[in-house]
Amino acid sequence: MAAPGNLAVLESDLQSAVTLLKNLQDQVMAVTAQVQALTKKVQARAYPTEKGLSLLEVKDQLLLMYLMDLTHLILDKASGGSLQGHAAVLRLVEIRTVLEKLRPLDQKLKYQIDKLVKTAVTGSLSENDPLRFKPHPSNMMSKLSSEDEEEDEAEGQSEASGKKSVKGTVKKYVPPRLVPVHYDETEAEREKKRLERARKRALSSSVIRELKEQYSDAPEEIRDARHPHVTRQSQEDQHRINYEESMMVRLSVSKREKGRRKRASVMNSQLHSLTHFSDISALTGGTPHLDEDQNPIKKRKKIPKKSRKKTGVLSSHIMARRRKFLKGLARKEELTL
Amino acid sequence: MTLTLRSKKFMTNRLLRRKQRVIDVHHPGKATVPKSEIWEKLAEMYKIADVIFVFGFRAHFGGGQTTGFGMIYDSLDYAKKNKPKHRLARHSLYEKKKTSRKQRKEEYKNRMTQFRRTAKASVGPGKKK
Image (cartoon, rainbow over all chains, first blue to last red; front, side, top):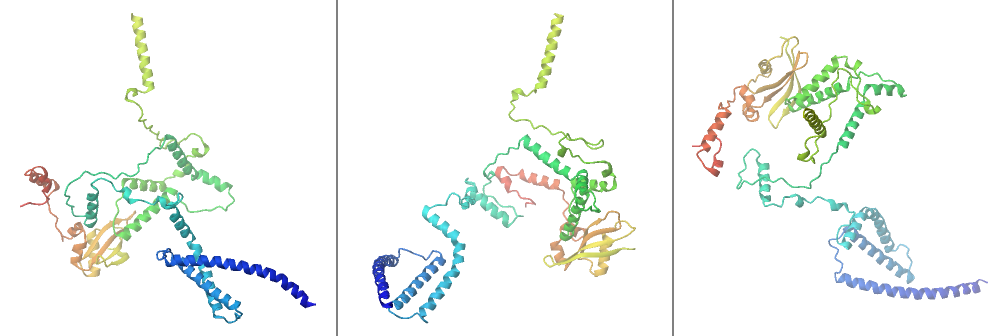
């Protein structure tokens, strides 16, 4: 029959119900105690939030409102009322949607909040923080007494650059001392750079380009291409003409520019590229060779080592010749003696 | 007299109160046209003579074409204010002083000899009465 079955179910349920209610009571007491302690603290203004992040405050308030509405609903349900069309349900739904919409904002602020919390806890920036390397202009100003003079002079100059600024006391110019960096480019590095440049030049030479064309599968292009130097020069000329016309000025041409222009125009008129090929020894690893009528390669000047002492100025081969000469002298004396 | 003037990049420069343009002169078969001729031609075209300034004429390779700049000011006052002095001098609107630099330096030095030590710094350029 259904009734005894129900009774059995009810009995087992009764047990669990009683234990659950007891648990509930304990928990409720604990929660109330905590909440009361919190409210006391808040009323004693232990948590000032005026200068905090407004997003967090909004979230706090919304959560509190949510809790209030939820407790109101629970109260109604526990005393037997129905939730149909309850005003609190609508309010709950509204608060829930707002909280959901706030979640991406929370994501975006996560980094900032974490950093603030970390700074507040440790009292200083962490080691990996890139903000540690921000510039400190106070370190760059010279700590000498002529600091104020320099500032005034700078202001005066910026105001009226044509007028002479009247200086009260003429002080010696002290250059600003920033962090000094040691310059140390060794011979090996210079050699490497030279090789790199020679390589680039060799790669863009006509020999290599024709090889590329031969072995690549791309279709052959026939272009009205002049020598790359010439095109570069004509581009620069065009740029110069544009500048002059837009600025309404005439720019002066330096000697170097004139030489470049002349060489570029000469390249057009000669049959230079028919018989002269550029040097590709940088790629093959051989010694650099040259055609007959080209200029010889400049020998790199050896930079004298500064560590050489004054006493050992004479180089070794001169010493050797000296020794030879003296030996010859000694032998002559022996013979005559 | 196959002189053709064409103007490119015309712009009204309100800041300097003038109209500026790039002038292309086409003169096939002749030598480079002097500035004064171009100036006269422009004066004919625009009817005002004394506020027109032309400068910077360069002939192209091979001859036959020259490019330069031309400016027409709103009035002579603005022209005097805004133009560099050597250009005004070409139109005899400005006379620069004829004392040479050497003379001026000598005068300055002689004036300095009257003073001693730090008072020398108070000797300024120009005549002191």
